[in-house]
Amino acid sequence: MLRSKFNFSWVFALIALLGYVFISFMGLTYTQIVPLGLSALISLVFAAVVVFLVSIMCKAKATRWLRLGMIGQVSIGFIVLILLLVSSIFFTHFTKMIKEQETIVSTYTRTIDDARKLDEKYRAYVDDRCADYQAKIQNLKAGSSDYKKMISKPSQLGYTKVQIARKYSETMKNFLLGDNMDELNEKRTQWLSQDITTVWNINLPNNIQDVTSSVNQWLKNYEELSSKQYTLETSVEAFKDQEFNKNAESLQEICTTVTTPSLTSILLALLCFVFIILPWLVTPKNIASIGDDNNYIVEMPDEE
Image (cartoon, rainbow, N blue to C red; front, side):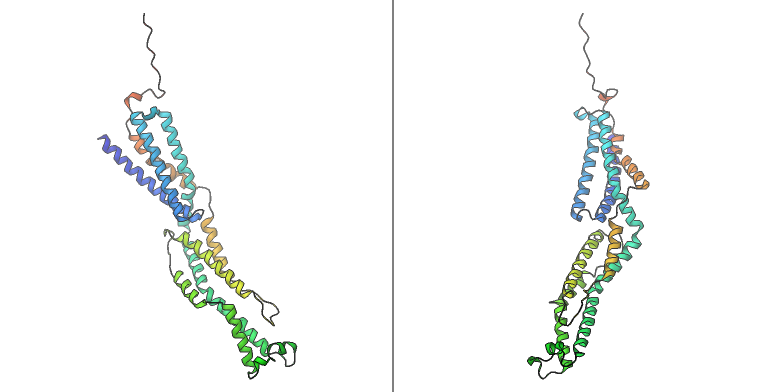
């Protein structure tokens, strides 16, 4: 009968512990302090340590294992409580993510949309710049130094001014677009095709980090390609996309800003603590330890 009661209490304890650890694990992943795999490992180790400590408390109470008295058992229970209170930081963080789910999902969607439109925006930038370049060459006055440099060349014989200007414009376009642009765009579009509609998706924190770092790298590449100044260009404004940075930074701020544990989280941690130590509470105390938690040595009386 006691064994059945003991096992049933462990069911309650494990359900409470696993639920609390999972919420804390989700909060830890959103902070992006450590990778997803390491977050999972930390959470598993945390749960294993708590189960181990409670097992020691139960065994010591039932059998006086290692002569661990009530003071020692309570001390171990206090360690379990401290662990739960510390992890309530991450518990609180995920509850914040749940409350702000609508904002997070909508901002993430806008960030993905910005990333999908990035190549389109860059091509529009290239087209505008090449059109300006072509117009500048077409407007060169015959006999000017720039005219002689760009148009009055032996290699340009037989071509009209418009054809020469278009040729220069197409050469600039090839330089600005770089190699394998279409192939890269196709791969990026496939990679950005995943839609996420809930903060409970375990991949969302990792996706936020990956999208932000990847798109920032694409922006850097575009900026490097577009920062080069070509003949006749007096000034060059490299390609930038402030809209993506604005949404990405807003999303990162929401997801990675950790606050102090809320009162609700602390109360839930205390409630979970009660359920987690339930096996210890219902474990019958060893009869040899009743009234004797200090391990007194019984002295034999002197012989007369």
